[in-house]
Image (cartoon, rainbow over all chains, first blue to last red; front, side):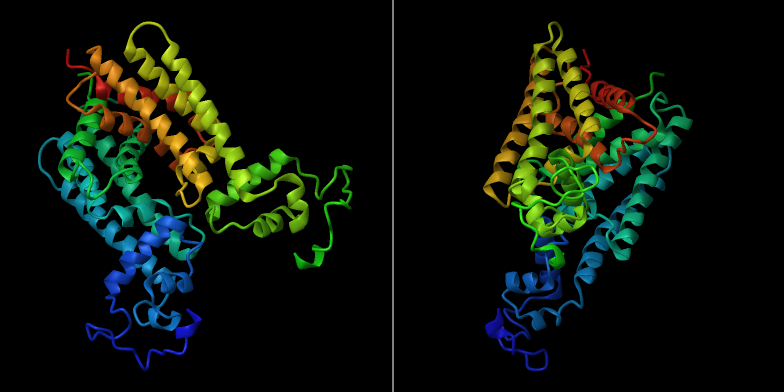
Length: 211
Length: 211
């Protein structure tokens, strides 16, 4: 992209759609495409220069949209984390049986994953090599703790089996949800409804109290 | 590491233990440490130069042990794939109930994961950016197909529920096993026996036929 490196933020080029920058990406577009690149080649291996190249932007033009790779990472994974937290808060606020709250947590988390599969995948592949990544991983651990708490509450109410440690059962439950990132495709045969129903049914039956 | 770049394979340095190379790694050591690096920073982001630096070897000395990054990848993941295939073959050869074969497959795969967690993690993070990666991913897909077949057989025998599609139930089963890579530690509280028992118990109960 060296042939374009003289283009500066102060003198943006015009494209067909008349937007600043070239070829006229929104900040959302840049983040979305960057997340796909991170997932395809690894966060560490993807430089801002490579992202610019992938977008057909100059390296200086990409900074018009985002100030750093970390800003993209935080922007993308925070959205997933916020939705997950919201889904779990909603599940926790349900009246009635603690088994229903656990089930709602599974369904809610699966739906978020199906809505933002790339962002959740990125979140799951974080390695904690920077402070920002470590911070995001801590928020991710919070989601795990929530799942463990849902299982523990249901165990204490005697509505799910207690021969499995709550920490283990909670991790396996969230792990089963997260494993969807391995093969889920937005345009695939199975949608959020079928998948959230299937995961909830498999796990809830697996956790059913013998009582 | 440029200060050592004149060391050639033809004139290996001697270390305290008298081995060729420095500081006296075996090929196994090099692969093991490389896999940890791949998992920590990403396969794409880890060059042979970086690996050499991590090992305290010159870039030319590392080629004494392995000819390429891909050779390390294939060596490490093939071992995990072979053991997984072996475990599934053994499960498939069990006489009796097809439910027992499915359970044995879950237990076997979990044990392999607990024995080679880093190698299985690397296998799960492959992205298929090279032909070699694509080949390994195809072998990995073979493991998935085996799991789906175990579920389908048990469904056909009427011993596990058939309201979940076999392809989906098989993927969720293997996904639950694989999710252990997210948090399993060889020196952790829970060992292969507890974990394989817990995953098998959760999933088998979840898949239990209503009959």
